[in-house]
Amino acid sequence: MLTDSYRHKGMRKSLVRIVQEKGIKDKKVLQAIDQVPRHFFFEKAFLEQAYQDKAFPIGEGQTISQPYTVAYQTELLDVRPTDKVLEIGTGSGYQCSILLQLTPHVYTIEYNEVLFHKANRQFQLMGLSPFTFLGDGSEGLPQHAPFDKILVTAGAPIIPKTLLRQLTLGGKLVIPVGDTGLQKMLRITRMGEDEFTKEVFGNFKFVPLLGKQGWQ
Ligand code: SAM
Image 1: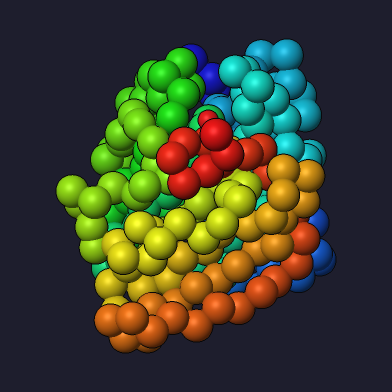
Image 2: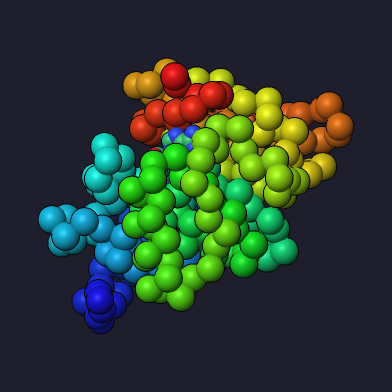
């Protein structure tokens, strides 16, 4: 069982300062980064690097996103305490744990079975209870829709229409879209039944979103 020592807490404070200097302003997001022990989600080989502002391998060819990226996406999502949120791409479970600091209603879906079980074990050890699913999240989670917020943590080739249909009115989808090398961060807001606004933010590099609406 991993411990969260004063040393880890100190390194987290420095990480909070780093993401703040890079432009993250939302106090609740910064507080969440400060609260969640990122090293709990790391492979043994990389434990010492857990508080660097970098992405790291988590096995199965996947990565835990860079803390700045996690903070950036979470800030764009603008999570309220009553929001029902869907995360697509559970991965290590770190981003999900950040979301759980902001609302208790978090649904998360992972495509890779090994990572799904690993993240579930970690949630259990930490006493966290998101609703977890194994499957193709590129189609969302229609049986549990609608969601106030949907966050995609893998790079998509297109904006999946099925995800737009799973937003509440006023709901937001944050998704990196582009080719496999580079994506633009998009925020889509559902304004009406068939009315959506799109905002385009900076460039990011995510592992590919797989599945029916992702990369085949
Ligand atoms: N959010 C994760 C974290 O905090 O560690 C990082 C996500 S990692 C950058 C992307 C994840 O998306 C990988 O775990 C990958 O297996 C998953 N993924 C890719 N395609 C998916 C799909 N169609 N449905 C669900 N998960 C998918």
